[in-house]
Image (cartoon, rainbow, N blue to C red):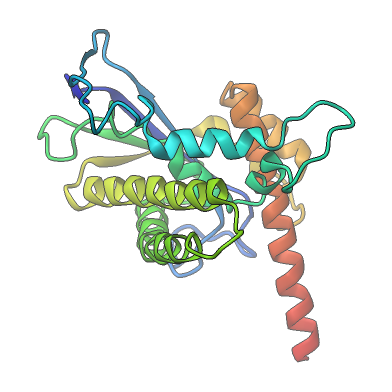
Length: 264
Protein backbone atom coordinates (compact mmCIF):
# COMPACT_ATOMS: atom_id res chain seq x y z
CA UNK A 1 0.00 0.00 0.00
CA UNK A 2 1.40 3.39 -0.95
CA UNK A 3 0.40 6.75 0.48
CA UNK A 4 0.55 9.96 -1.62
CA UNK A 5 1.27 12.73 -0.87
CA UNK A 6 3.32 12.47 2.34
CA UNK A 7 3.32 16.08 3.54
CA UNK A 8 1.74 16.29 6.98
CA UNK A 9 2.50 19.11 9.42
CA UNK A 10 4.26 18.08 12.63
CA UNK A 11 5.18 19.57 15.99
CA UNK A 12 6.83 18.09 19.09
CA UNK A 13 6.31 19.12 22.72
CA UNK A 14 8.88 18.14 25.37
CA UNK A 15 7.48 17.86 28.89
CA UNK A 16 10.16 16.88 31.46
CA UNK A 17 8.59 14.87 34.29
CA UNK A 18 11.21 15.88 36.85
CA UNK A 19 12.90 19.12 37.81
CA UNK A 20 16.69 19.46 37.91
CA UNK A 21 18.04 19.43 41.46
CA UNK A 22 19.44 22.91 40.78
CA UNK A 23 18.01 24.85 37.85
CA UNK A 24 20.82 26.60 36.02
CA UNK A 25 19.93 26.61 32.35
CA UNK A 26 23.09 28.41 31.25
CA UNK A 27 25.55 25.94 32.78
CA UNK A 28 23.60 22.68 33.04
CA UNK A 29 25.07 19.91 30.91
CA UNK A 30 23.14 17.68 28.55
CA UNK A 31 24.39 14.66 30.52
CA UNK A 32 21.84 15.42 33.26
CA UNK A 33 19.05 14.20 31.02
CA UNK A 34 15.56 14.48 32.46
CA UNK A 35 12.91 11.79 31.89
CA UNK A 36 10.68 13.51 29.36
CA UNK A 37 7.21 12.86 27.97
CA UNK A 38 7.07 13.77 24.28
CA UNK A 39 3.86 14.73 22.54
CA UNK A 40 4.17 14.15 18.79
CA UNK A 41 1.37 15.74 16.77
CA UNK A 42 1.03 15.29 13.02
CA UNK A 43 -1.74 16.94 11.02
CA UNK A 44 -2.47 14.86 7.93
CA UNK A 45 -2.62 16.45 4.48
CA UNK A 46 -6.09 17.54 3.39
CA UNK A 47 -6.14 14.89 0.65
CA UNK A 48 -4.68 11.45 0.97
CA UNK A 49 -4.88 8.82 -1.75
CA UNK A 50 -4.33 5.16 -1.05
CA UNK A 51 -3.07 2.87 -3.74
CA UNK A 52 -4.21 -0.63 -2.82
CA UNK A 53 -2.50 -3.47 -4.70
CA UNK A 54 -4.76 -6.27 -5.97
CA UNK A 55 -5.18 -9.31 -3.75
CA UNK A 56 -3.33 -12.36 -5.01
CA UNK A 57 -3.42 -16.03 -4.10
CA UNK A 58 -0.53 -15.46 -1.70
CA UNK A 59 -1.72 -12.20 -0.10
CA UNK A 60 -5.49 -12.67 0.18
CA UNK A 61 -5.12 -14.42 3.55
CA UNK A 62 -3.14 -11.50 5.03
CA UNK A 63 -5.32 -8.98 6.96
CA UNK A 64 -5.59 -5.62 5.17
CA UNK A 65 -4.39 -3.84 8.32
CA UNK A 66 -1.17 -5.91 8.23
CA UNK A 67 -0.07 -8.86 10.31
CA UNK A 68 1.53 -6.71 13.00
CA UNK A 69 -1.54 -4.56 13.69
CA UNK A 70 -3.81 -7.60 13.44
CA UNK A 71 -1.78 -9.54 16.02
CA UNK A 72 -1.57 -6.48 18.30
CA UNK A 73 -5.35 -6.03 18.20
CA UNK A 74 -5.90 -9.74 18.85
CA UNK A 75 -3.62 -9.67 21.87
CA UNK A 76 -5.26 -6.54 23.30
CA UNK A 77 -8.65 -8.25 22.93
CA UNK A 78 -7.50 -11.03 25.23
CA UNK A 79 -7.99 -8.51 28.00
CA UNK A 80 -11.66 -8.06 27.07
CA UNK A 81 -14.03 -10.78 28.16
CA UNK A 82 -17.50 -11.15 29.63
CA UNK A 83 -17.71 -11.22 33.41
CA UNK A 84 -17.22 -14.71 34.74
CA UNK A 85 -15.45 -16.10 31.67
CA UNK A 86 -12.09 -17.81 32.07
CA UNK A 87 -9.09 -16.17 30.41
CA UNK A 88 -6.24 -18.45 29.41
CA UNK A 89 -3.69 -15.61 29.38
CA UNK A 90 -3.21 -12.40 31.42
CA UNK A 91 -5.23 -9.41 30.28
CA UNK A 92 -3.60 -7.84 27.24
CA UNK A 93 -4.40 -4.29 28.32
CA UNK A 94 -2.70 -4.77 31.69
CA UNK A 95 0.45 -5.94 29.96
CA UNK A 96 0.31 -3.00 27.55
CA UNK A 97 0.26 -0.68 30.56
CA UNK A 98 3.70 -2.02 31.51
CA UNK A 99 5.34 -0.76 28.33
CA UNK A 100 7.99 1.88 28.93
CA UNK A 101 6.38 5.23 28.24
CA UNK A 102 9.24 6.16 25.89
CA UNK A 103 8.22 3.26 23.62
CA UNK A 104 4.55 4.22 23.78
CA UNK A 105 5.45 7.84 22.93
CA UNK A 106 7.39 6.87 19.84
CA UNK A 107 4.62 4.57 18.61
CA UNK A 108 2.26 7.55 18.31
CA UNK A 109 4.25 8.86 15.32
CA UNK A 110 2.46 7.93 12.09
CA UNK A 111 5.32 7.70 9.61
CA UNK A 112 2.90 7.33 6.69
CA UNK A 113 1.79 10.98 6.98
CA UNK A 114 4.84 12.52 8.65
CA UNK A 115 6.82 15.17 6.74
CA UNK A 116 9.82 13.78 4.87
CA UNK A 117 13.08 14.33 6.75
CA UNK A 118 14.99 15.22 3.57
CA UNK A 119 12.66 17.99 2.39
CA UNK A 120 14.48 21.33 2.58
CA UNK A 121 11.36 23.32 3.51
CA UNK A 122 10.47 21.10 6.48
CA UNK A 123 10.87 22.79 9.87
CA UNK A 124 9.40 21.01 12.86
CA UNK A 125 9.03 23.04 16.08
CA UNK A 126 10.23 21.41 19.30
CA UNK A 127 8.36 23.25 22.05
CA UNK A 128 9.94 23.10 25.51
CA UNK A 129 9.55 24.76 28.95
CA UNK A 130 12.34 27.34 29.25
CA UNK A 131 12.12 27.10 33.05
CA UNK A 132 14.00 23.76 32.99
CA UNK A 133 15.54 23.47 29.51
CA UNK A 134 17.41 25.59 27.01
CA UNK A 135 17.02 25.22 23.25
CA UNK A 136 20.26 23.23 22.80
CA UNK A 137 19.39 21.03 25.78
CA UNK A 138 15.99 20.19 24.34
CA UNK A 139 17.72 18.95 21.17
CA UNK A 140 20.34 17.05 23.17
CA UNK A 141 17.65 15.31 25.24
CA UNK A 142 15.72 14.26 22.14
CA UNK A 143 18.91 13.07 20.43
CA UNK A 144 19.93 11.05 23.50
CA UNK A 145 16.47 9.46 23.61
CA UNK A 146 16.54 8.11 20.05
CA UNK A 147 20.16 6.99 20.32
CA UNK A 148 19.19 4.99 23.39
CA UNK A 149 15.95 3.63 21.97
CA UNK A 150 17.18 2.35 18.57
CA UNK A 151 19.53 -0.37 19.90
CA UNK A 152 17.05 -1.22 22.66
CA UNK A 153 14.32 -1.96 20.11
CA UNK A 154 16.73 -3.84 17.86
CA UNK A 155 17.36 -6.19 20.79
CA UNK A 156 13.65 -6.35 21.55
CA UNK A 157 12.77 -7.40 18.00
CA UNK A 158 15.42 -10.13 18.00
CA UNK A 159 14.35 -11.37 21.44
CA UNK A 160 10.65 -11.70 20.68
CA UNK A 161 11.20 -13.30 17.30
CA UNK A 162 13.27 -15.94 19.11
CA UNK A 163 10.73 -16.36 21.93
CA UNK A 164 7.93 -16.87 19.39
CA UNK A 165 9.34 -20.29 18.47
CA UNK A 166 9.02 -21.55 22.06
CA UNK A 167 6.12 -24.07 22.26
CA UNK A 168 3.03 -22.99 24.22
CA UNK A 169 4.10 -19.35 24.39
CA UNK A 170 1.24 -17.09 23.17
CA UNK A 171 1.93 -16.21 19.53
CA UNK A 172 -0.20 -13.06 19.62
CA UNK A 173 1.82 -11.67 22.52
CA UNK A 174 5.13 -12.34 20.74
CA UNK A 175 3.80 -10.76 17.53
CA UNK A 176 2.51 -7.74 19.44
CA UNK A 177 5.84 -7.17 21.25
CA UNK A 178 7.82 -7.63 18.02
CA UNK A 179 5.57 -5.20 16.14
CA UNK A 180 5.65 -2.71 19.03
CA UNK A 181 9.46 -2.70 19.05
CA UNK A 182 9.49 -2.32 15.28
CA UNK A 183 7.11 0.66 15.40
CA UNK A 184 9.16 2.40 18.09
CA UNK A 185 12.46 1.71 16.31
CA UNK A 186 11.09 3.05 13.02
CA UNK A 187 9.85 6.21 14.74
CA UNK A 188 13.14 6.70 16.57
CA UNK A 189 15.07 6.42 13.31
CA UNK A 190 12.73 8.98 11.76
CA UNK A 191 13.36 11.47 14.59
CA UNK A 192 17.09 10.75 14.32
CA UNK A 193 16.94 11.55 10.60
CA UNK A 194 15.15 14.83 11.32
CA UNK A 195 17.85 15.77 13.82
CA UNK A 196 20.67 14.85 11.43
CA UNK A 197 19.09 16.99 8.72
CA UNK A 198 18.55 19.95 11.10
CA UNK A 199 14.80 19.84 10.56
CA UNK A 200 13.87 20.34 14.24
CA UNK A 201 13.82 23.91 15.60
CA UNK A 202 13.57 24.43 19.39
CA UNK A 203 11.06 27.04 20.54
CA UNK A 204 10.29 27.95 24.19
CA UNK A 205 6.70 27.42 25.27
CA UNK A 206 6.08 29.86 28.12
CA UNK A 207 2.71 28.34 28.94
CA UNK A 208 4.52 25.30 30.39
CA UNK A 209 6.75 27.23 32.79
CA UNK A 210 4.03 27.46 35.42
CA UNK A 211 4.14 23.64 35.68
CA UNK A 212 7.62 23.92 37.22
CA UNK A 213 7.01 26.89 39.54
CA UNK A 214 7.97 26.78 43.21
CA UNK A 215 10.31 24.65 45.32
CA UNK A 216 8.51 21.35 45.09
CA UNK A 217 9.58 17.68 44.87
CA UNK A 218 11.94 16.71 42.07
CA UNK A 219 9.26 14.57 40.39
CA UNK A 220 6.30 16.59 39.17
CA UNK A 221 3.12 16.18 41.17
CA UNK A 222 -0.15 15.05 39.63
CA UNK A 223 -1.53 18.56 40.17
CA UNK A 224 1.34 19.98 38.11
CA UNK A 225 0.60 17.49 35.36
CA UNK A 226 -3.07 18.50 35.44
CA UNK A 227 -1.93 22.05 34.70
CA UNK A 228 0.15 20.76 31.79
CA UNK A 229 -2.85 18.86 30.43
CA UNK A 230 -4.92 22.03 30.50
CA UNK A 231 -2.16 24.20 29.05
CA UNK A 232 -1.64 21.79 26.15
CA UNK A 233 -5.37 20.96 25.77
CA UNK A 234 -4.49 17.26 25.73
CA UNK A 235 -7.04 14.74 24.58
CA UNK A 236 -8.14 12.22 27.25
CA UNK A 237 -6.13 9.40 25.67
CA UNK A 238 -2.90 11.40 25.64
CA UNK A 239 -3.50 12.64 29.20
CA UNK A 240 -3.87 9.02 30.30
CA UNK A 241 -0.50 8.21 28.71
CA UNK A 242 1.06 11.21 30.49
CA UNK A 243 -0.16 10.04 33.90
CA UNK A 244 1.03 6.50 33.15
CA UNK A 245 4.47 7.92 32.29
CA UNK A 246 4.41 9.84 35.58
CA UNK A 247 3.74 6.63 37.53
CA UNK A 248 6.70 4.96 35.85
CA UNK A 249 9.02 7.87 36.64
CA UNK A 250 7.90 7.88 40.30
CA UNK A 251 8.71 4.15 40.49
CA UNK A 252 12.10 4.64 38.80
CA UNK A 253 13.10 7.46 41.15
CA UNK A 254 12.02 5.44 44.20
CA UNK A 255 14.09 2.48 42.96
CA UNK A 256 17.16 4.68 42.45
CA UNK A 257 16.77 6.15 45.94
CA UNK A 258 16.50 2.65 47.43
CA UNK A 259 19.64 1.52 45.60
CA UNK A 260 21.46 4.65 46.70
CA UNK A 261 20.54 4.06 50.34
CA UNK A 262 21.61 0.42 50.17
CA UNK A 263 25.03 1.40 48.79
CA UNK A 264 25.54 3.87 51.63
